[in-house]
Image (cartoon, rainbow, N blue to C red; front, side, top):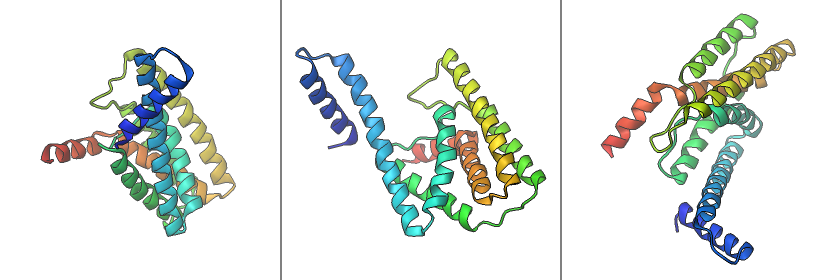
Amino acid sequence: MTLHELAANLSSRLCTAIEAEPDGKKERRIAFALEGLISTGYSMLVIFFVSLVLGTVKQTMAALLFAGSLRTFTGGVHARTPTRCALISGVVFGSLGLGVKYLPWPEGFLWNLTAFMVLATVILIFAPRETTNKKIPPAQRRVLRIWTVVLLLFFFFFLIYFLKTSNFLLTKALLLGMGWQALAVSPVLREKIEKRKEGE
């Protein structure tokens, strides 16, 4: 049974238990929400397991927090199946966790703020990222862009605070998380994925 079939089955049972008459439209909406919830939970478990094995739980979760909150509004690349998504997420965030823990990092304001501005510019140019199956209406695109700007402003003030308090774990987590999202919305990664799909 695929994840989609599981979500559809759970949605059907839930609607049947609540309502006497079936409502196909409501079932599809609930199934879509359940599929997203289960897929996210699956990916989170894989990421947590990988970080546990690598001994980078704190670092990985910090990077995931920053990247995940940005992804809510910017979108990004998507894997073709939930299993592939979970495995890729495990590799990506496992690597980010290792980067946060072991990567040497300059302590000065100038380098970190410059890196932030470059990454923020890339994100603002290319976000929100559409997928082939889901186009974003113009009105929703404006809302997502506004929230992206707001979140990046919060990140900017967080970064200033982290640098002032010499919290280099969160400094690295914030910038590496932003770096992954900048890559995820950029045409560079999109073109590579599309070429890979054509090859399959």
